[in-house]
Amino acid sequence: MRIGLLTEGGYPYATGESRLWCDRLVRGLAQHEFDVYALSRSARQEKGGWVSLPPQVRQVRTAALWAPEDDGHTYGRRERRRFVAHFRQLAAAVCTEGDAPEFAEGLYGLAELARECGGLYAALRSELAVRALESACRAPGARRTVQGAAVPDHLAFVDGLERALRPLSLDWYGEDALGAVDLSHAASGGSAALPGLLAKRFCGVPLLVTEYGVQLRAHYLSAREAGLGAPVRALLAAFHGRLAAEVYQQASVITPGNTHARRWQEKCGADRAKLRTVYPGMEADRFAALGDGAGGRGGDPRTLVWVGRIEPAKDLVALLHAFAEIRKEEPQARLRILGAPVAGPESATYLAHCRALAAQLFPDEAADAHAVGDNPVSFEEIGAPEAPELVDAYAAGEVIVLSSVVEGFPISLVEAMFCGRATVSTDVGAVVEVIGGTGLVVPPRNPRALADACLALLRDPERRERLGAAARARALELFTVEQNLAAFRGIYLELISYSPVQREAESVDADGEPRPFAYPVESHVPGRWPGPATTPNWADGTGPGMVPTAEEAGR
Image (cartoon, rainbow, N blue to C red; front, side, top):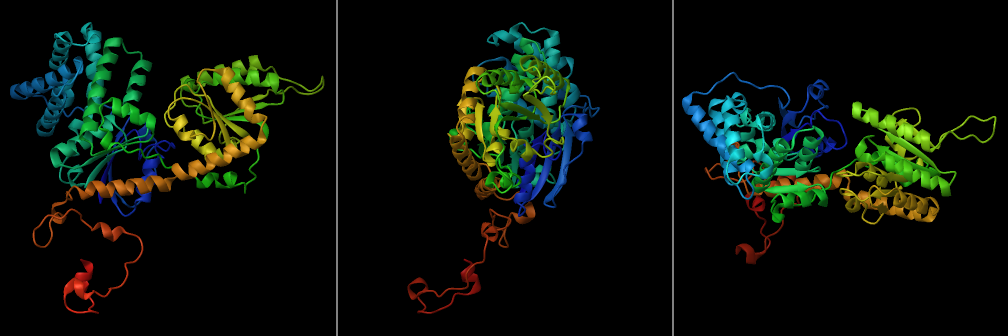
């Protein structure tokens, strides 16, 4: 097959664990060809370059969501009338509650206009768009939150809208691009899936959508963090909600990465019959030595370990207060906080705050008057001499702690499970689904409950070992690369079996009849076919012992 892989801010740019699954997917399904269509989010991301691409990646086409993309075209009177009509449909759907079929009509109308005439960048930022949006906000039945929107709010919304709709103006929908693939696979919802919507609309290409983190939820959080006003947030939330609903409606199959994502998708209108949970595949080999015990499995039984990115959502403040309660009952306990390299001023500020709190809660302790004081809490960076590799971080102790208040799919928790470690986690995101009874789970923002759970494991080595072994067995069953590849291999075959190949030269056989596959599915079945077998006389009526011809055997 020829797969169009659609990404936003991910492959081939990103190298983080949360998006490396695209690279593992492409490398693991080497029998297929991949065309990558990538939307980048920042100049820094593009400057970082691509990861090494395998030979089955035929081409990579990129576009930026952050840089202006004005093609210099301006609309004439007829084109302006078309634009205003379609934009009013889109704006009316965004500003009103309830079902709004005009959203899809406006969206695809703008796409067809951009495909035929270009110029959508300038039109979406024009006075025409602002006036149409203002009328929609003040129309009867508009959402109460958007009725008071002012001109600055309208300008802020059309700016965000133009960036989100930038894929409409790309030249990705011809017969030499997405029109030639057998299947579009969007690695997330939102703008990444928009090219897949248009490929289905213009070329009939089936669409598969995978979401390991719900893109709609990410938009909600980013709008709040950006400090936008309530009307702008409401408009952006409504637009992304409408877009998500259209993506889910047009997708042939939707594969959430966990039940948490699945609930969001169902709430946005996704048909349950289309939903199939496929857990992300993670490499278990690098943790094998620690998990099997071959690399010296035992860590310090008195040490708690936290691993992850240091940011406010991880709630290290609650963890430090919980550790203060632990130290009252277990004076020899230690806490090692091993974080990824700090990126951005917010994370640096939060790290400084946590260091100051740790110094306040735990003054340096010394055994006697002549010894140097030591703090029971240490902040270390993964890659430093104390923990040169990620596996060394998990090897530092026997209990791994996750204290987050916001979490999607907890990657660090799965890594700890691969290492055979007992875990204590807060009940957020997909934590309970991932743990599945192999670790202790407590409410978020509850230092007392977190402390009690940690104390229970610190005092019970047999329970720690039992939970760690069960956690490793669960991780090897559900979260490996192999299970992920097997799931997508089957989904690809199923989807393509309902659709003819898009390449005209291969879509008909020698008799001119349409055929559903460029290559028969059976050609990818592993192993060798058995030799010709005898055909019983009741099958062909020619007598016993007759050997079928090669053509008959092929049938």
